[in-house]
View (cartoon, rainbow, N blue to C red):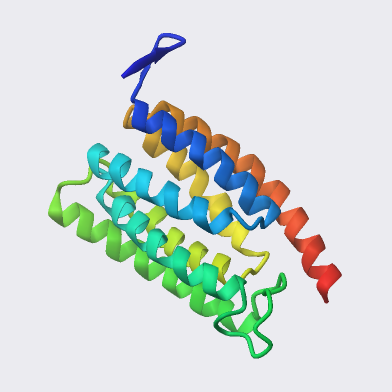
Length: 197
């Protein structure tokens, strides 16, 4: 533990937050280092979440770690591409929106119920809802759809509350920064999508 401005912060939490800052900048720019940073950040947050009692979010970080490999393959055009070239920015087809909404509600309810049943999670509602939306957000991100930012816009305030209440102050601050990047990301990715159209 180190003390910053009178607040005790774990070294792992601080390192995870610094990696997370580079991660969000890279996601905003859709940079080539985004997915490798996602792998690294997921690994750090597996440790942070499980040690803080955020079991659903810890499991989601394992999912994010695995999804990063899929994201690399999709973005580079290795899968889901006939031309085998880098995936352009896209928009979520309208036929998916109902399924996304239903999945969000059902997964949130399932995780909330399971975490409450197990009794291990300190905040089962926040943990469950944020985890459910993260599953959807990562899938949309792997498709390179500009609307994926809306998922994160809902998730980030939940994560701020979760990390702050758990004493992970560096991560809580990081997720405040993420919320700003969500707004910037919507504008930037939408413009890039329209330019590709």
